[in-house]
Amino acid sequence: MKERLKSWTLILLVASSLVQTYFLIYRLPGSDSVLTSETNYVKTESMGQEKKIENLVFPDKMLIHQGEKKHTVFYPGVTFYDLIYTRLESRSFNNFQRRSIQSADWAQIRSENEGIELSFSGGVPVSLLERVMRLTPDSVFQGETINRIWIYIDEKNAKPHALFFSARGDVVYEANQFDMTVEDIRQHVNFGENAPLYELVNNQYYIPVNDLETVQPVVYAGLFTTEQMQRNLFFDPGITRNIQEKDGSQIYTDSKRSLQIKQEQRWMSYTDPSAPGASGSSPIRDVLAAVDFVNQHGGWDASYQMKLRSSDENRTTVMFQQYYGAYPVLDTPSFRFGTISLQIQQETASVYERSLLYLKGGEQSSKKVMLPGGESLKMQLETVGKGKTIRDLTPVYQPELTNDGLKLAPEWRVTLSDGSVAEIHAVPVTTASNTTQTKPDWDTKK
Image (cartoon, rainbow, N blue to C red; front, side, top):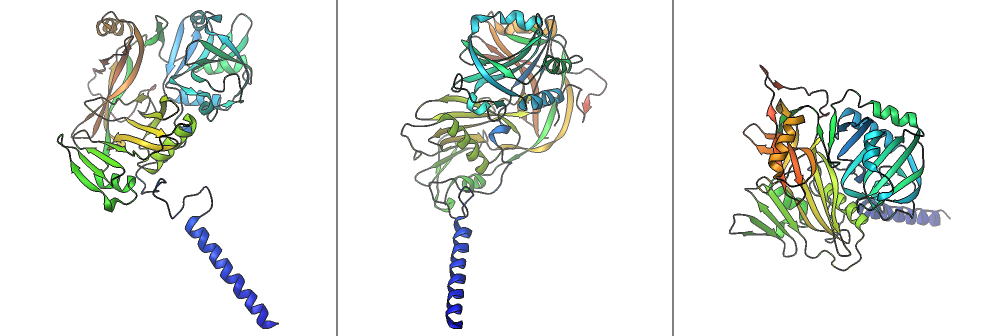
């Protein structure tokens, strides 16, 4: 009897050891495995922060309509922007009704009624918006892309309205049930009472009534090395070979994938031609796969905003726009920085592009500057517009590498009707000393 008991005990110990070994090697489903096949993403060294899609979907501007043609604009990171947006995220919206865009005089409503308007340039699919706001799934607009959310008070009957505008520009969806009262909306609008006033021009864009004080920081920056990117992107970096291009760029390849490094531009481009090419891509799953890929292959060095560029049955193109404080950082042909771009095919990255420069955190210095407003800005807009219709005006940072670090120069970016852009630069504040480590009241939290 004792011998039989010892035998069974030994069998149980061996079986338990085998089970533990299995889980140590493969882990539980849904977690990272120690053994990774060549077709899967490889968990690599940490080069930046990891983010969730919820961190990457947010409005590029928040418009506060105060009635009597008075408006205020809050940008991401401004205290009142964060406060209002956090509150709106916790509100629920449901029972949507489709309406024609022609069903109301929106310009008149905007100028006469108090309200809050969220602008998502390029638009956000409803299925992604549901991840950051409490929208009850509704077949009426489930497949839509939304570029504006507008919550306002109908002053004639003291009734609140919540509207979701299609990026196509032809329809609007009204939430017939949402848990915000007239008092709730008015409280949010009151946050804009002492903020700089803006004027709506041609029902297209907003300009500040007066010059807008902001800052021009010089921030600390680092540079990813070629070796770091090789280790992050190739299953076995040891088998890659190097090809020197005529333009001076370097290409590293393992015969399947390739990594092109442009040292002068401090820019990298990774391609994987073996990514699935058959039809059947899901834009939402592809966007989530893009976020996962960046998390595992370089990470995030700052705040980024997701922009869904295009999508068809074969691939999804996603761009992540970098923000510093309130303003996006420009990516220009002369200085490649500020964006991370991917093409995703069936949840697999086929193209991955980003700058090798990254923000290390902290500022070397900063100085106050003025973005022009009012009549001065109007005159400059007439000059740069050259008779063309102006579609949008937004503040941005123009990056420039200096001996001290990365200078971020504020400027107005003017988008014209033909798609071309122009810039209007900020000017220094004329005081005895304008170098500071602080920020103006309406600038952002760092």
